[in-house]
Image (tube, rainbow, N blue to C red; front, top):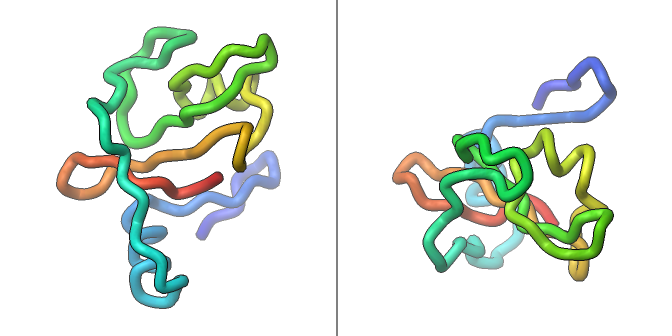
Length: 97
């Protein structure tokens, strides 16, 4: 885990998957079941390693890149948003919210 300059902590998706599969709760990973988004609904940049399926400050939900989520999202959790990270096989699993 790394502390970023803005005080936010971050870790790689692989590190997170190791943490939750080795030492985490006994709940199964929650996989994104649909076709993953190819681009952010707000800025249209390609989704690379993670995205947030979340409510925006304007009301509607969107699949957002982390940058747009920081500006437009309302938070993570039930009724707010879920953060998905890419697995080594190219799928996405819920890593937050």
